[in-house]
Length: 113
View 1 (tube, rainbow, N blue to C red):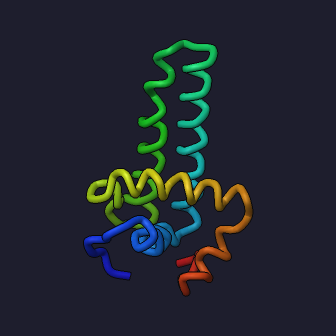
View 2 (cartoon, rainbow, N blue to C red; view 1 turned 45 degrees about the horizontal axis):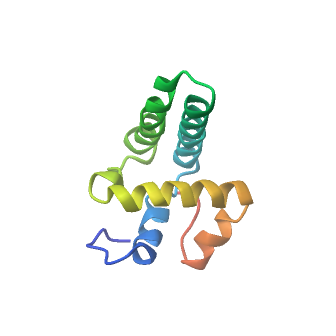
View 3 (tube, rainbow, N blue to C red; view 1 turned 120 degrees about the vertical axis):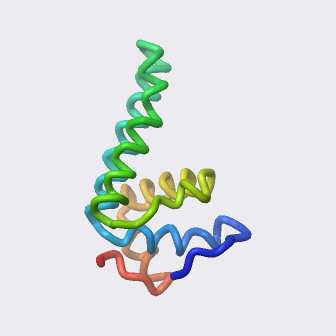
């Protein structure tokens, strides 16, 4: 699937899925997103407050590891930061719900390289 100038998130989503076809990349994203959610939640609710500010570091660190060293592609966040963040959370919740493979099939994509 080719990277182009997407007009909306529904058009971007299949591209995002394809950029995350490697299961190891998705696992690293899952770890990063989980740690980011925890850091934000704990930092805001019980402190220390500075912990909340580490959320993006956790999220991006693991995601970029997945892209640069596992998937070997450029993170979409460089060109589409808002849609990529939305995609990260959509990927996360599809993973938790067990519906991610169905989402890949829906767009004729493979969830494995």
